[in-house]
Image (cartoon, rainbow over all chains, first blue to last red; front, top):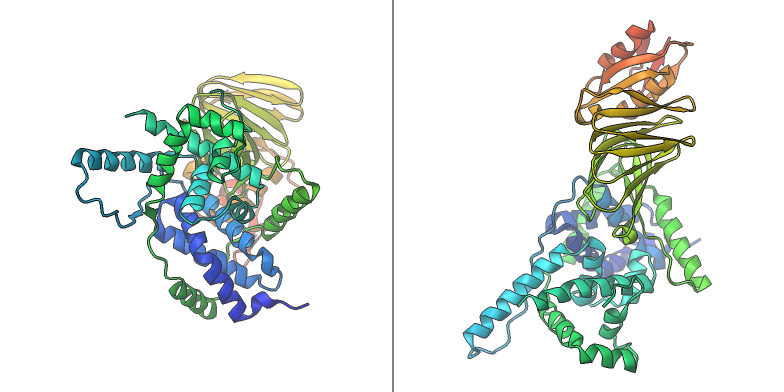
Length: 167
Length: 302
């Protein structure tokens, strides 16, 4: 039986394809970049150890499952506070300051609301928005159905929508 | 609008998969404007850069310099999940999936975990807890193998089922011990209902219940407000030598070869700090002697 995953070039390709999304996924869960990147190392280390047993097309769900399990096994889950980088703000320099302030406040409330989402909803929402993964891709990574992803996404949006009512 | 578990409209809206009627309903009450604002704002966020090449180099370096770290992760589990999902996809059943989460504490390692409602659990060494994350809001059901201490937030009933009996609570702190065929529940605060062998017993604060043979009995009042194992002590009340040695094996990750025919039951404690000390605490009252092998892995009892 051939084991393409054990060949370094193939393994590297798999790593480069999935590592960043896995790291982001773990960041959404932990709120800690260092912890997320360590978990990525561990998960891919595990994949390498088992390269002879894992089929190429299962590699992605393997690393997500292993990393998720490792995360669940880690000590006390802290409350997650997520920080993101802002994409270069649009060139609306002569915008009304009151509007800009309102926009900033809205963003702040949204960040808090995202941080407060249940973990499974938060990760699905952000994998879709930030990593631009389709529901199908997320479902494959997490080993659940597309329908389950849609439900989590819907619930996330129901929760997040509440902040638009608080103005 | 009524909350509906099966509702996926907002998710499908994002994908442009709403039918005309759904689309116009959500448009009419302003929902779509709200959602669009959430999406537009979220989409301005990005993650910090990830140096994938650097990370790969690090992975490679670690791989060649160190032998694999020992971290048992039940490798078959991934396959079981993958297989289950595949099976369901093949069968075309899209709705019920692996929503179980499992928390596992390996030997010599307790694990703390907080559920999404703020309830907490601390798992003793070698224990595991399963729960359905997706259904947590409606039903707080857990399945315990081994021993765990719970702090439950007020809310819906909270269940801990074990192979040996079930505990139902409404918001309290308690410890469930369900190794082998035994069951012992200690309630530190609030009230819990213990059910085993067709018998039920309601416990108030500082009370304990224990399965003695097939009888569920009240087992004295407690002099501690948290489980003793949390501070590194195992306590027994009329336990068989086998139960005590099983616990020793879990706490110290050793094998015990019991060559004595100890019929006496053991009531007392042993501490988790030092193997030899623990063995003395167990063996002296039982009139046994012990020998620890060179490698500290095997203990022989005579």
